[in-house]
Length: 428
Image (tube, rainbow, N blue to C red; front, side, top):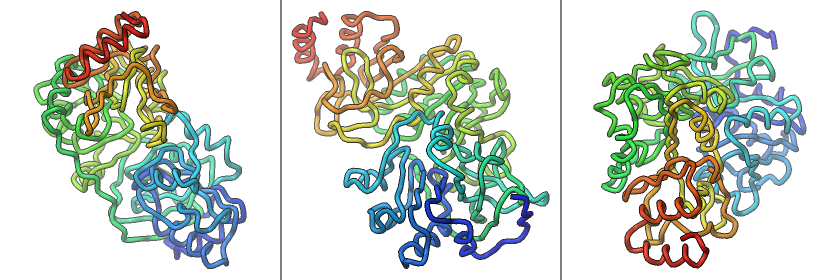
């Protein structure tokens, strides 16, 4: 620290700061510094680099040899959320997974690491010498001033505001790369998604503050809010759908209790349209996830609306959102953070959304979760479960009442069998 790294250096300089046993902290998604990781990985592969490296990261977007265990203990990945890239490697045993709530990842990483080195993608420094972490604040921004930093600057990274800036005097060094950001186009909603969106949108009052994710159902919900007024956004993920709502004036944040008039997130993932919208946009702020996802912060926002997807729901109301057939698919992310925060918000509502059946026709409303399924939103926290057949309001309901409500929103082809199962379990 204190080097005042005002000029870029070669990426190879990163190797001067990576010793045997170094813990590397890497932002999620497009915050990953690909050139720096290429450089470190190449040195390890060539046998001239350090050994015993551990890379701590959520949601990797780039596949790499070390993820497949090519270098053994010389370089190992510790995941905090599985992506389409790391999922297969985890199943083969070459990647570890730490269960967590997203709001607590910074604290867990601090506990698991010793003198970590944060390597991150960033926007070019401004005239005052400040870099922006761009599309990522996540857990990494909380390390500013508390850990060593080395940055990879790309012109493609938007300069964003909030609490994700650091000065050149706070970094060991920085290099340049010309790699573009990975684009994640919005998924087009189908008829079922739009039906679910309609049930949710009609229950969202004007002036509410929203959290929603990425995917077909969230996209359909945001599209269904076009006639709403004075909505606010406080969410972990900013996507292209938020741009439409802000540009149309639906989202202005004027009724928010916290960060009034500001759209707040902790990371962004979408297309170049989103990246251009975020660049030097003072109406949007990216804050550390330990703030954005803290249920105690969320609870202070009146009328908070949490919207999250799940994979299956049992008669108790337990929502399994991170495993399929007992095998890990993702992780908890911020679902439980926001569900708990909405529960304590004055006038808050928590929606869990899902199609009533899988692609092969199996019911997603089940009497019991399958062996090995992980509960993401527990029965005592779940509020409203929504399928294309309606809304099951579970908060404060008995097991029998929950069972009846969930059967009523199951696919009609499965309702009779679910009713028989409920009787056999004594829930009717």
